Each structure stands twice: as C-alpha cells, then as structure tokens.
Image 1 (cartoon, rainbow, N blue to C red):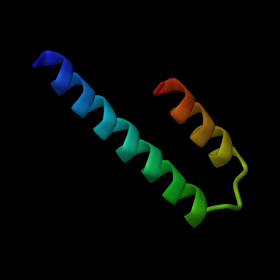
Image 2: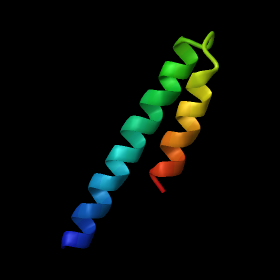
Image 3: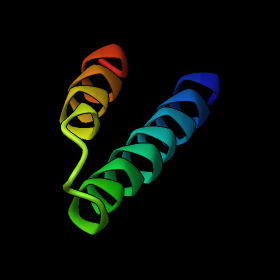
Length: 46
C-alpha cells in the first residue's frame, strides 16, 4: 500500500509542478531562463 501511495504522490507532484512551469513559460516567454527551469524541473523529477 505504501508503494501505491508514494506513486500517487510522486505523480501528482510531477504533473502539478511540471504543468505549472509550462504555464509560466507560456505566460512569460520573454525570459529565456524559464525554458531551463522547465527542463531542470522535469529532469530532477525522474
């Protein structure tokens, strides 16, 4: 049961922060650092 709970929490965090970062990139594309932030966030979540 702990494995399933950990998987649910991990998936929730990846989807929430990953999608939130992508939304921030789309809303403020003038700054190039957002693309690096998105890449780091999704890479570190694996």
